[in-house]
Image 1: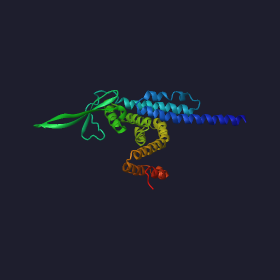
Image 2 (image 1 turned 135 degrees about the horizontal axis):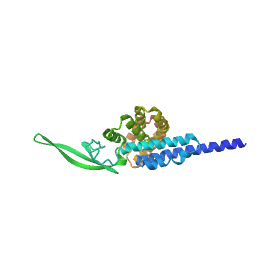
Image 3 (image 1 turned 90 degrees about the horizontal axis):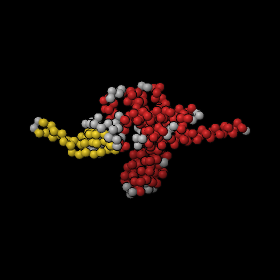
Image 4 (image 1 turned 45 degrees about the horizontal axis):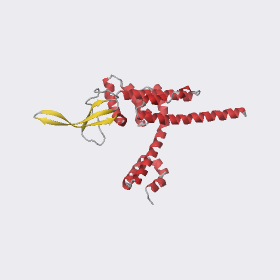
Length: 257
């Protein structure tokens, strides 16, 4: 009886630890997407002291991943004029755009055109905007990190490692994260990160799917049925398995017979 009780207690303990793992994952992702890396790494401090090595080592690897993610972010954060004149594409804003200044919270971007006076080409700024650092997309960040790393003589393998961790810590573009890890050539070092990526990938996909369903419901609630139906077709192509499982529910959301 005593052995059964101890086994039951141990199973309950392991279950609590796994549930805590899941909570920590999402809390850390949310903080990293706000570029609060120190706060995210601190979340895992208690679990580094767990008596089970599977949890303590996992927490240590999460901290390492987040710290390396911050290295990538620091290549851009508050770099001032370091990346001045670097091209920076802005979504839904055609034309030439370049960085002027990067501070602690935002990036100053200038839109330019060229005019000719005789044979001389003159650059003219037509508009300026500020983009919050929290709103910089991973593809935009990758381009900035590449330029910044080249200025600091950081080798490609190190940059691949850092940026793979940047994406993993934020739970974004996990396919690209895997690509960066593999490109780094640091197989022993990245193996724990790849293991975590394999765990997170289906969880991220599930959350994205649920978020998209909420967006679909919002479109219908706003009376935008045509947009909702177009969005549903997009979901069907992007998430065929999930769509098939919830097809009846989606038809009801779209008010289809």
